[in-house]
Length: 93
Image 1 (cartoon, rainbow, N blue to C red):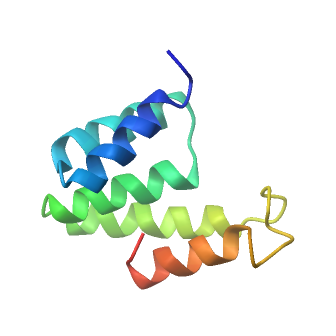
Image 2 (image 1 turned 135 degrees about the vertical axis):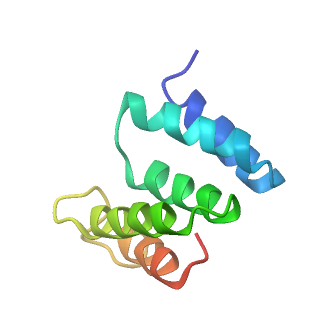
């Protein structure tokens, strides 16, 4: 199994609107390694599962992680973290 498998599965579940499966997948991905994508995805899944407080906390952590200096792509706002951070802040990621 690929190291990205839990994250890929979680993203697919999120796109399908399978919130419990998305939550489980993002939690599995975070158990392997904390990433802004997994934090944002889990925050989104939890939002739809009516866990607003935890959802917002995770999305804030994702935003901060996307904006962190030294993050790959951070130097190029057109392709790097800035568009993703903006999407998280606007609640669309």
